[in-house]
Image 1 (cartoon, rainbow, N blue to C red):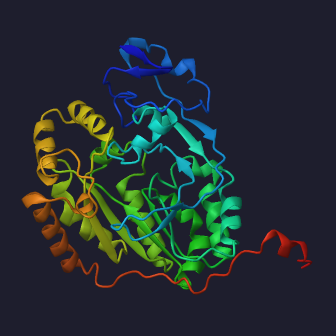
Image 2: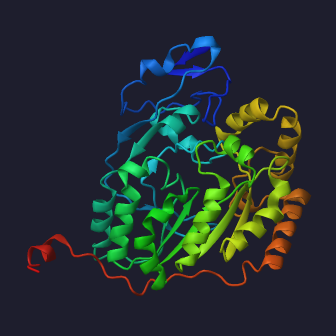
Length: 370
């Protein structure tokens, strides 16, 4: 059954193959000018035999004036980040970035996974910002909102272009990704790692391929991510494991096993994060639970509420990252013991900022005859 919300086709809480969200509701509207045409009508037609139609991924070019995003959050270890893309084809149902699609009058549901935005001018903007006399160097984080190595990076290579600018300037950076595609850029990352300029975090939510395909339908398999960890570590690139998010009743039983496997794959540090359900993520997550885990949906939500002071989400700094209550404490205790057993978190990964050399500005390039 289909219905129309604004100019978007949506489905009545049905699962689509290889997609995370089960519907496409638009709960908030900002009435912004449309930046792309309506979806392909072929994507909205009824499928044969009642199966939902396949969705095509579309990419819209975005032309921002700046590329470095600043933040003052006291519970994150960086104050600046770069997001080459908006939306993410990985389709992780829990993604806290989903609500940002509402700013484009698009749904945080299926639109977030299929109607993507790319910033092809990112590298040029980055070079210009680094060249400003007022710029002060500190590590830039990639992958803080949407994955810099999601499938469209294969053809757009915006992340790689930005890495090349940072490598030339000896600028420190961190990368967080769910994709083994990061190993494509070892030729840039390994020399930077030798100078103490880069660290890569790979996120692993589950080692069960079936669970992973349900929670993160278009992300590479856990086996591929572990292999990527090994390749990065073998070339001298510091590797961090992000066991996030932990979903009680679905993935929490895997904590010790994941810690063991990432340690064997070469990770030296790890973190854990209970699932967060801000804004429109909560109804999307509950609809997903009802579709894929109906037998335990009530129990899972009760456990999440117990870690969020009786709510679906706790937006407060610090507690939003750790959760509260006995269950959150138990998960962290298990994680800490596993890390101690397997030698993780014995030393922090630190990056250098003293090697930074600003790129040549336009005036300097005029006199560069070499």
